[in-house]
Amino acid sequence: MIENLLRPEVLLSNVLVCLATFLITRWALKRKERPRRQKAAVQAPKRTTDGPAILEASLATLQSYKNNLNKYGYPYFQETTPIVIQQLKAEANSLITSEANQPIHELLQKNYEKLRTFQEQEVADTKKLELEVLNHVNKTMITWRNWLKESR
Image (tube, rainbow, N blue to C red; front, top):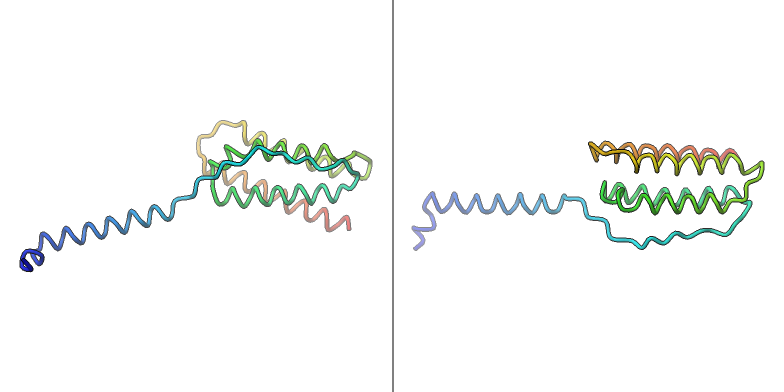
């Protein structure tokens, strides 16, 4: 019986089975996770004249969006971008516009309008769109953080 296990055909088939198992397992572990369904719960903050606080809340929203977009990729973008846009709109609308808060209000509006254009454009290359959105979010976060530092 041992002579049958040591035949070249049997050894070769065992090596191929082990290699295939290894490659399939490796592929399965490297795949991006699918995003988990989230409730479409938009939390509108109370109306306030505190522009920096609203900008910080929007920064937190964008940071979470960026992290999840990195983790889950394009499927997350498809499902969650409308919710993020609604959240950013709610945050912008909660700001009572005054002369001092006008630049913050404009920054918030430009951001969610740009995200809306990303969402509405036709997609030929999902990876490219994902990178463009991440680039926009990163630039926006840097701009907002710099604005907050200068205003303090």
